[in-house]
Image (cartoon, rainbow, N blue to C red; front, side, top):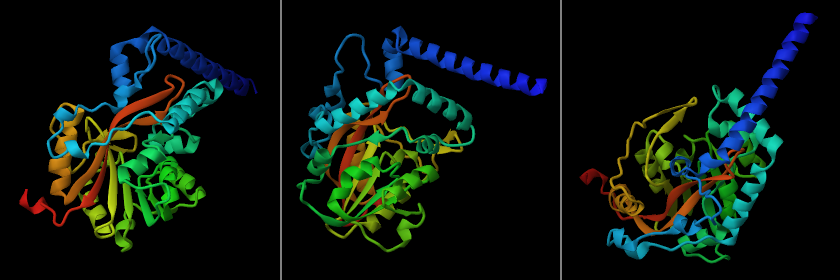
Length: 328
């Protein structure tokens, strides 16, 4: 009996110590260190001391640095009401102290055996925001009343971004590797297909969305080939988002490794890499760029940061008459 009590006391002391540690880290993180330029750069967080967030930088593009063929295709985006609403929700959730402590504790326990995506799915956190409904319509050059038959959202996560697009389609299919995320998608009544199934069905889609997935796959070129075959001829479109700078890696069992098909995208600036993706990667795989924009890739935060931001390039692509892949 005494042995059981001792174990219980040790466990309670460990939990209290863990909470105290997290609280001290949070105080440090939200203090002077979060305002270090190095830390802001590493975590892509827009926090700054006593100053308004310069969100216009999230959307800035120097047109003269884009290739001549890409310049007329650029669509200027800006911070709209839907993006502001997502940021507001993220800030509110970050302030839920006990919820954030619970999330941190569970993440620590499950981290060695589960992927970050699955942990987020289990906890119901980490929702992403890529574009608003208005931004989606502007990129595809459609109106609010436009309707089509089918959408396929590859790597749909919890379906938050899928929800932005679904109003325009009679049928929505989705893929996802993480089992907890699949549960979220099924609860939202999306038809969830296996990651090796959708290419075999023979179904063609009016729009395929591939959002921040190209740099997380072992075979990104094969994915582009499969998407091209799955688009409705002539009218089918691919909406593809890629984090820039493009730094591909694949998560397997909590560890990271270089993909089998490594896409090396040249250029140091956002504009240079977007030009390289447009003229080299996509053209070689049989796609033409119709529109491209710069958007923030937003993720709900945690007890350390209200939200996280990465730099996205979002393209609308159509299949060209023939692939140049064989010529490379």
